Length: 193
Image (cartoon, rainbow, N blue to C red; front, side):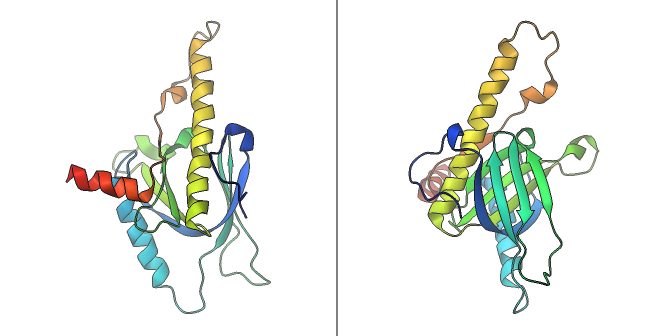
């Protein structure tokens, strides 16, 4: 459902919408890096493969804007086994996005939950989506990169504005997007080992 254009995605292309299958969410162990999305993606893919016959993953409309990522379930006939879902993740809460290197049709992102200050609770959550193709997963990754780039520009403008005495601490959050191909990520992991 996403634009089938090739090449890089720019902020001018946003908002951009993809129709994907929602694999789910799982705790992540860190803020960014493929090493923090690999295990959660493996667990979610295994759970999806173990679904009973006839049960399918929910289809969601994933829209990337300069403000974040919006997910909304797509109606799948008169009776759907899944509850209607409408969730928005602000760009400030997304710390990482990547196309998976094993399941190349899977895009995953790490969200930093608001309850990060509560002791004992893991603040990192990995959400994963199955795209219609490997290229679609790549385009989704580039779309999030464009949103990050715009957010970074806005943060720099805010920090440079002399009239703002106190700059919001939310502007100092870190994020990353991995634009390497799955093959490049795998090669880099092998050289690190």
